[in-house]
Every structure is written in structure tokens, then in C-alpha cells.
Amino acid sequence: MAIVSEDPSQPCYDIKSADLSLVALLLKTTDVEAVSLALKQQMAETPGFFDQDPVVVDVSALGLEPDQTLDLATLMGVLREHQLVPLAIKGAHEALLLQAKGLGLVDASDARIRRSVAVEGPSAPPTAPAPLEFIQATPSPASLGAMVIDKPLRSGQQVYAKGRDLIVLAMVNAGAEVIADGHIHVYGALRGKAIAGARGNTQAQIFAQVMEPELISIAGVYRTSENALPQDVLGQVAQVCLQSGPDGDKLLITAVKS
Image (cartoon, rainbow, N blue to C red; front, side, top):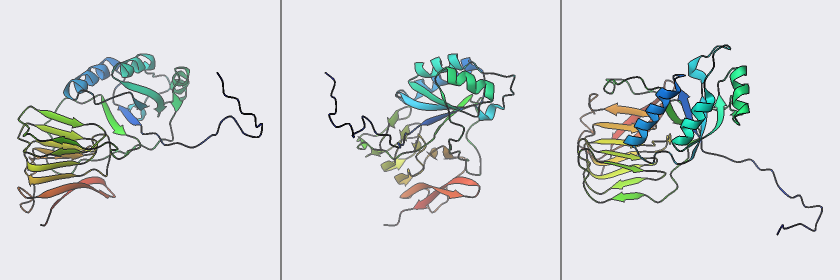
């Protein structure tokens, strides 16, 4: 049964502005099959990383000419298969934009997408170039209660706190990996990998009782053990946060004084 207002002066709807947390897919290839394989690998490494997340397809880095195109229809099918919901496109030329609109995508040319740079020093071990990169377009803080792990994490184990902070009440051994969309607290030795702000939350931080990580990362900015930590923080109670500067974001690691 429909509910009808008896007051004709009252409109039947209101238009309001709204904020929506989006993930941006920064394409680095037009090979949709390569994108599909990369997504399958990511889902295998981090199950449940995507959960019907709205996504902006950013083709800016491809440098497509007007006579070059992209199989958007197949790409959208691949994204939906991996629990992503394509909503918009960014950086498309007129012909590709027309195709995108025909598929139900909106023009997001004005969308601002945060891009971070890695800190100076030795980089992570080389791997094959990735055909895609995910960046949070409008980061939002974790809104759920923290996930708490009360047992040591062994090599090969991985924990992901989606949409929340992660608290580990024991050691994170070398070869183990802890990931959170919010903060990471380790009340023991951190000797594995810690990835905070996994979906682009630049306000996320990492705290450890004993800071000896193989890798630390916040919102995509990382530092590996190849670039040794200063002696005043290595093995100490320490915290990690992002520090913004004219050249981009870098990790700031400081000892926590008792």
C-alpha cells in the first residue's frame, strides 16, 4: 500500500549531498585478461578484501588515443565477478566516455584520487609489473569495533581486519602478515609485515611493543627491512604514521617514550 501525503505543499522527496567511499582502479594495461588474473591473485592472497565496493575505473595512465579503446563491457564483468561494483570512469577520451555512459558509468573526470610515493631507500623485492592498482578515492576511518587476536601469528599466517582496527596481543613472527583498514596495535614483537590503512586511510598508524618488522606500510607507502630502521626505534616501543610533504607522503617512525 502506497503512503500518500495529504499536504500538497510537502514534496515527495528531498535532494541532499552525500559522501561515498570509493575505490579507484588505476589501470596500467588494456589487457582485461591480465587484470582478471591479477584480481584472482589478490583475492587468493587476501580473501574478502572486496565486498561489493563501488569503484571508479581510472584510465588516465593508459594515455589512450582517440582511435584506441578498452573492452569496458568485459572489464565490468570481471570487476563484478570479484565483488566490485563499477560506477564511474576517469580520464577517458570522448569516444570511450560515450561507450562508458552506454554501459551505465558516469563521468568522474573531476574526481580527486590520492596517490602516494614510497620512501627513499631500497625498494621491495622486484616483481612483475602489476596491471592495476587500487587506491581509496575518499578514505574514511574504520567504523567497526577492533578485531582482537590473542595468539601469536606464525610464518605464513595472515589476518585482515576489514573496515576496522586490528589489535594483536602477542607476537607477529617473521613471515606472518597483519593487515587492517584502520590502525594496527601489536602488544608484542612485530617481526612480520604490518599493513595499516590498507584501503587508503592516511590517518592510520602502526604501534608495536617491539618494532622489528620485515615490512611496514600505511596507505600504500611502505618501508622494508632492507632499509634498516634507526637504532633509536629498532627493537623499541614505537609507532608509525604518515607525514605529508611537498614530495608526497613518507613514513615517520618514532619511539614511544614511557
